[in-house]
Image 1 (spheres, rainbow, N blue to C red):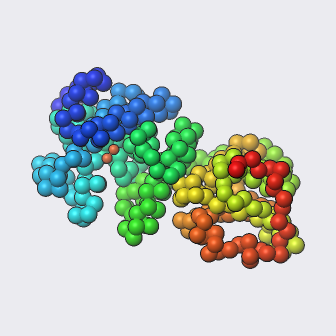
Image 2: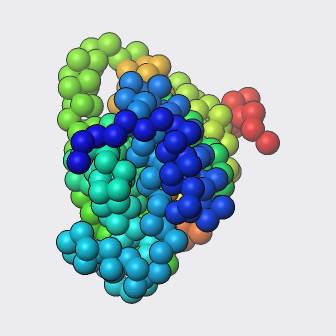
Image 3: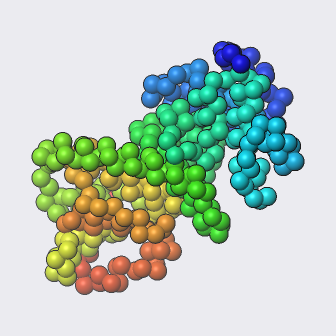
Length: 327
Ligand SMILES: [Fe+2]
Ligand SMILES: [Fe+2]
């Protein structure tokens, strides 16, 4: 089928009968966000508009109807009954996007990837995936951080969104979908390679900060992103591994991720300083090792469980009152 180049109003009218009212509002929100991200990151507006407007057109179908579409379009259903409707609709919507709406393969692929991602996500795939998660109607802890990050660093925002989805699934006792894991690995690999190149280029330009200044800068960044219960301990006497331990709490897994990402990002941008390593110790504890300063970002229950403050109780608490502004 030859590509039909849709205009916004005609496509809205064409998809409207497929969607319940609430889903239609979400679809328009998704399209608005996708167009804003397309503007920011230089993606084709026609492609994002088409993909966003059709991405959920089979969402209201029953499992039986989904399976009928699978049979019609040769889609292999790999999902269990519990997750069928939630996951297969991306693929059945993609089939309709191609067959009924005449959309080209790269747009169809973005529709098919909007729920789980794919191993090698294009700019269009990432924008549609993320817009679905952060359009203005979405409201969940951390969504504001994700919206901001989407305009600052698209790849990190996609990673953060996939990670938070995977963690939610884990927390509910489910098994993370392999396609999402592959999507995450694909983007993280690309980021890692980019960073290695940047590291090589920037290493000599790093600003020299004393351990105390480094600790203070990290505290200020964390405070600006509303870290809770920020504390720093001076541990030079207790260990040769670090001079300062910084500990803070995030209010959600997304907030935790946002704090760790922001510290890493700003330390690189402002000072050319990279962590020696970053470790997701668990889904509720992330550690950034800046050699002389080790930063621990916890969820509240994890902070209590590991109780680093007690373990490092001999360390000297640093008075941070002059650095903290958040309530
Ligand atoms: Fe969807
Ligand atoms: Fe959606």
